Length: 288
View 1 (tube, helix red, strand yellow):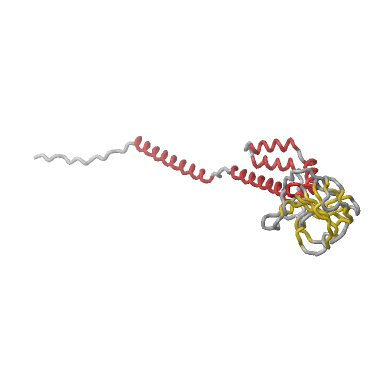
View 2 (tube, rainbow, N blue to C red; view 1 turned 90 degrees about the horizontal axis):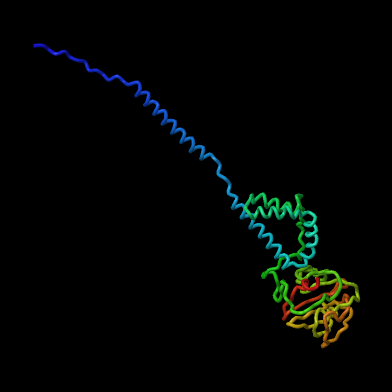
């Protein structure tokens, strides 16, 4: 019996081309993963663009607030506004480049580089130099509110409904509102305003009306009171002489008294009060 020959198993020889293909594929996969990872890291490190919209809104709100403050100052402190308005206009006239100002305003409204445009607008209006503003505040320069204003006092301008004239040619020496009383040395509310003038200067009727009273007191000295249309009355105090009598009809501008320093007064001046149905009004709107 013939035995068959034992045949050794033949192992498969690796294909060099297949191995090379697998190696290349693995290399490409590693390269792709590395590229994706690098892109993600780069994206995380990339700074995000700033949002200028919120900054522009803040600047807009600040500008509107400043404008409202200016309007409030004009309404509640007309004497102070009138005192400094000329100087402000003079400075703006000297420093303002109106062409640059309107150009910058247009760019700011259009949203083109809003922050830079607003900065250019400020420079064009107020100049490039730093403006020094005094921080010294007079105690009489207060902004009045419902909490700080006494009863029966109205600080805002009213429509009188009739013609009127300035009662005397003089200078404003004391405003309507809180002040340090020159005689008492304490802070009190001044229910009129004082116009300083030479002794004997003519005091004229503020408007058409009828002389209500001619009298004299320790505080007001010699004074005259006139009633006008629509519930308005005026009072003229510290006079040296009264030239009208109770019940007399007067026209706006008629002489009714003369300036003096009678009563509680530190010098020659007219103390002038304006009331409407018992409420004291700020006369500054009508005499300056």
